[in-house]
Image 1 (cartoon, protein in one colour):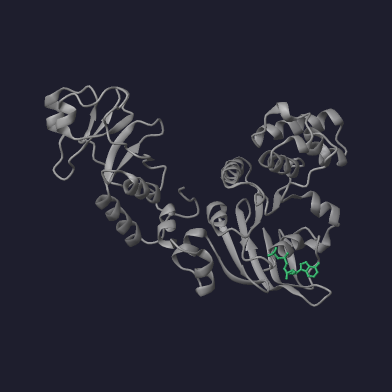
Image 2: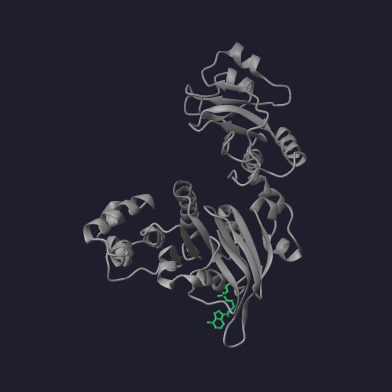
Length: 379
Ligand code: ADP
């Protein structure tokens, strides 16, 4: 565990970047430092690998002061990833990743083999190995940066705004990839961002800092959203806090109705039997049970649907029952032309439909049951 004890950093010009910060960073989880620009996030991160020395206070790694070991040994135990990846422009991708193992005395072949393994791990195609950084997209370069930081298999990974320079779609992909990678690797990750949505998405614990390097709140994301410590944290979390908190409530307790679900080629008597009192539509599926769209029962009985779903109302975006959150279920219901959400299994087959009312009841039930599940968030 990394433990910061009343750490203060005063730069030579008198700027107090971090002020009396105490934090316990748990092992094998992602701790995010978030806050507005200039609040001391980067300074805090750099004090952990001693690129910046604290003016006061101490930082302990597994109980020992980090000043007790040689700085090189400390840094070998900590991978470091920065914005724009910071790759060596004149080295190929494979040699960029192999840099640290080579410095640590591994043979070229062994280091390159390890680099190729890591490329695969971070989702980079092996065909990119011989390219140079400028021949890669921003998102690919960031993956190389992560692979390079992992090359010596350090227990700690320090990441400073690693995804800030890429567009939102690539950024989401990199975040998902990091979460997947972390499930396999279980590193102790300290991650700096100014983006609260990123913090809430990837953090196991989130430290919100305010200007002057003071800790405003340190809590799991769901708790930040439900109980912001003060108006600064509340403002920083921004609008839709209640809706966003629903991301942490699982959808598996949701009441799903299967009776209004019918195959496109169902006989007329079956269609009549499927009609539900407060739903003037039926959800039509293909023979495999995948959703095609909504239809009024009368139209369907009169041959209103073909196998491609022509003539049906769109079913919107379904949610995966049990895997997706109540936020996803509510979103589906709000977007659905009938007001009902379509639930599917991981293979895309319909498992039932849920009304806005039943989703509302599940939300009330989840609130009444107390806090959402921690630490694993449902996305
Ligand atoms: P953040 O990462 O949250 O944007 P930083 O840790 O980079 O914040 O900076 C915190 C404060 O310290 C800012 O006011 C910044 O201007 C100041 N600062 C950072 N580095 C130095 C330095 N080397 N000398 C003087 N002031 C610095």
